[in-house]
Length: 331
Image (tube, rainbow, N blue to C red; front, top):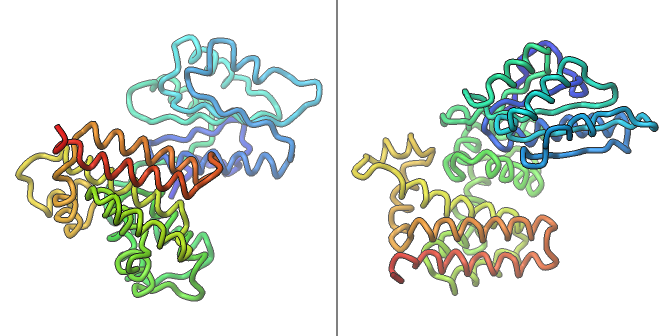
């Protein structure tokens, strides 16, 4: 879970610095600031910018005084990639931040753009740590904190089973926790997690993903339709597809001859999953992984409101993943 590293705990501090490479925590740092700003002023203007959209002079325009004194949140993503001239603009702003404006800088940390990082810290920016979780114990702690934040209890065995089933992706872990909390009353135990994520018959989102990455399009589509008809959330299916394809990409790039136990530790997968992914990856190529990930990303956008027909978006993604699973054998 994101942790604050300096004394201020006010999300409406003039400058918030979110440091790290964990996308979920970075997004949450932004969401917390935006929520606080809109609680103070429902008409808060939010500008979310990437380095290519922040040219020299743009920040000055965005933070110039307004006749209506409107509250504004300016989010700068990948701040380590800003141009030298824009970094000068940001450093100048840090010395005299404007009232009613909250600047949120998202920085990966590390050596690149360290001058800006140091300048923000020296200026007293509120800092939120968003590090990648690399250890199983950290992911377990994250799952426990997610249940706690949602006001629900889960047994230690249930938390461990969820980590073992889902893997290392925090966004997918958070989605799974939210789904369990929404669907289940009372304490969540290992048996409940098992029904959802390791033994939910043909309705499992992971069954859809497994059949798709194995190149079995017809079976994957059948499992997809059954899943949707039994109430499985579309976002869980895109999450499972993404996890399955990423697992293949990770294992394909791992050193040959490594022991399953070492791979499990390095890749953040339970040992049993290493064996399964090895069997699934036989027909895959690097281009196939890239193509499949793009298809899943498009489907994810579709089921989250970017398209008119979430079911069609999922069907397209399943077919694309199944085809990508045969790119090596097709050559």
